[in-house]
Image (cartoon, rainbow, N blue to C red):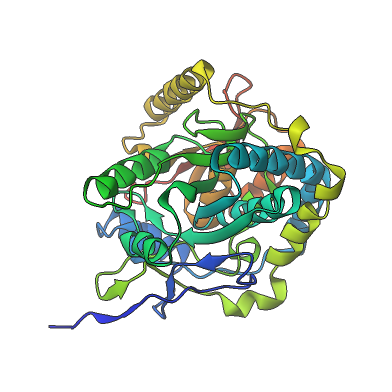
Amino acid sequence: MNMPLKPVFEPLKGSYSLEDCQFLLQPIDIPLLTVEEKERLMQIGGQHYSSMISQEYPPSDQYRTLFFGLVNKYKQRLAAEVAGLAKKIFDKKGGTVTLVSLARAGTPIGVLLSRALKHYYKADVSHYSVSIIRDKGIDKAALEYLEKAGHAAESIVFVDGWTAKGIITQELKAAVADWNSDSDYKISDELCVISDIGGMADLVATVDDYTIPSGILNSTVSGLVSRTILRPEYQGFHQCVVYSHLAEHDLSNWFVDEISALFSSISPDENASAQRDEASTGRHLKMQSYVDQLMLQHGVTDINRVKPGIAEATRVMLRRVPKLLVVKNRASEDVSHLLVLADDKGIEVSQDSAMPFNAVAIVANVNE
């Protein structure tokens, strides 16, 4: 019988400075699968996605050019949205804030919010990035670390990049409720995001489905850290792989520097208008209805194979085996990178001008 490996409870910094982000993850060395191998094992072998990880490769020159173009197009907007979110967090939490971003889509947004809170309010901010995994919950060892480190429970706010179907949001709410039922260190389950197309978050910057630039790259805009892993032979923090071989392609610090450099020309008071309201329920129901319709139309029985929104569709094109990409408008610059990825992979693209967001991808059934 294999004994569990020694627990790790030391923060990891990835390629960020520790002042910007501390990952409450433990780096491990496991076989890196191809995307196709991982998909086959998930669908045929019955292995949970969190037990495996695939190799990552440098983006092509064409894709990097698209990324830089989208940063240039949206950096002013994103900086303003981050500033507005920082104001909402400061108004709610005061001058001591513990940002807990959900690795890894939430990580660069957490870095930006940390910088904004310090810039505008001289706030005492700590930023940690932690693992949350569908069907497995949040990393309780990470929450225990926050408690032992002396961070006030009331100072914690969770951060992600966006919502889509809301599955991770629901996972977070359930995990926090479970944690609070068994702990005196009672934390809020409030979630802060840039884009709330799923109508599920609590503090939001926008409900638009637009291309948040950090959502179109993998580890090279997220501190060189992989999607999180959970394997039974390890104790302590959830795990990850650090893609050190991509260091020369890393844009993590360049990206947050590019956005945060704009804070001095932006007033947070003018950019804190988006609120979670009654319309959130309507947005969520509209998304749910469209996803149900799409599943029926294409004979999809597993909702986890349908990924709505630009960012989630991008994840499918980069990290899964896609079957179909549907876009609202082929001519929109917001989906230009998706069309490049679809062309590279030979994936069918269709257009539906009636969809309630700008893109959706369907993961292939490898059993077909």
